[in-house]
Length: 467
Ligand SMILES: Cc1cc2nc3c(=O)[nH]c(=O)nc-3n(C[C@H](O)[C@H](O)[C@H](O)COP(=O)(O)OP(=O)(O)OC[C@H]3O[C@@H](n4cnc5c(N)ncnc54)[C@H](O)[C@@H]3O)c2cc1C
Image 1 (cartoon, rainbow, N blue to C red):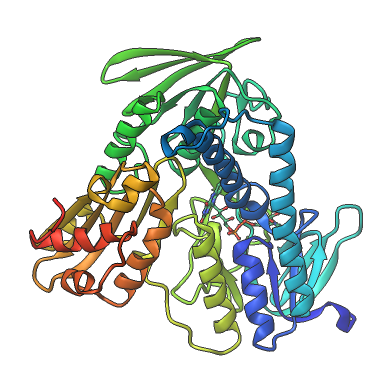
Image 2: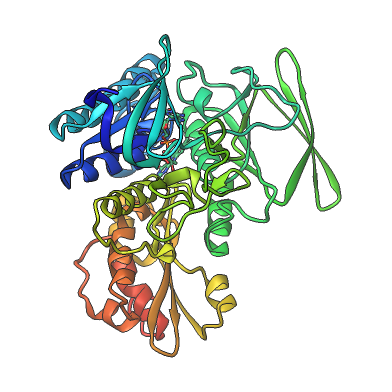
């Protein structure tokens, strides 16, 4: 074997987990290679996930702004969606981000090897290029970061037109007259929000009792109220029994509390989740333990096989880009012989960029009670925040969950204008083990949306001012 294929660390997959792990490993002086089977690095996040969806959401926001410009004393015609312009904008954003990763690879002297990678015995990775012969890479450590693939409905094929998934929903080149979105996790509610703003009649169906079901129940309820106000038809606690795909429409038969629900739309968007890509990775006969497709790891992201780490969406932790990146940093630093901080999975921020936005960190009220805390809650609405009135968006609230004993903030849950940006204060607060009192002692500038945080913290002690 030539030195050309000899590395300290080889990473399989170049999503936000893999490419960040590679940069950190290279910064620490390790000879680093990334094996990627797609044409360009970036993974789901850059090509099919976070980045293009947020561009689509921004276009939706611009459209909505033109529709309400009159409220702010501006006369403009209501915006019309230009599909070609949208496509060009998204491609420019995705391309710019991918170029950024390619630049960082060059800057950090990371070798990008194109092909499908798998473990091939201790200290070896086999790479099969698209049109070439397999070859071996010798490596002291391997980091698996292969991400996920889309999950469909059993027995219902994706045809890209009547029945679509999140990949199809990105670069569709059309806006269906009507759409049923199946699944109200982050991906489902974001696309429901986007297509409503783009002009589709949207219905959203969720099996669990709330939209954004992993969030504090109050956020789901508030989102339902606001989606309904926007004209989105919401069916929670509803299970799909049958999908019939016709030439011009899709019929969905579902049940809700023992009652039959019949829905029909031009397009069905299935957003019921993704499955980890851990097959054909050469894991058989190794110490890597897999449970329902997910790879088991310890706090340093080590698998049961010496020298093999796993990070990102293939490990059983929340499927979020920033978490994948953080896990990548932990794995790379450990591989370099450092002792990084283990991740506190109670403190992973979660953002959903639908309209209105939803964001949270820490424990929900129900989770805090389940863990035995004596819980206090402070809640404050955007209706009483001056800046929200200026922006013409007073939907939603901030909710702070604390432990009565020490006044420690256990969770912050936001829905409303710029909730995803406001979350960073909560992220800092929880990481610094802030109390509600310390949060309201921190002076929040006026007029800003962040005042909602100060007021919610005061509300924990019944001391809110503007309500
Ligand atoms: C529509 C949508 C919107 C999303 N929005 C957000 C968001 O706003 N915020 C957020 O935090 N998260 C979001 N996510 C989730 C986020 O995209 C993932 O959590 C993140 O991409 C996971 O990173 P990863 O590195 O684990 O895997 P991925 O990004 O999936 O990357 C895996 C890479 O590995 C490659 N690969 C797979 N197998 C092999 C192999 N055998 N050999 C070589 N290469 C291989 C793949 O081609 C891919 O490039 C979204 C997801 C979707 C689908």
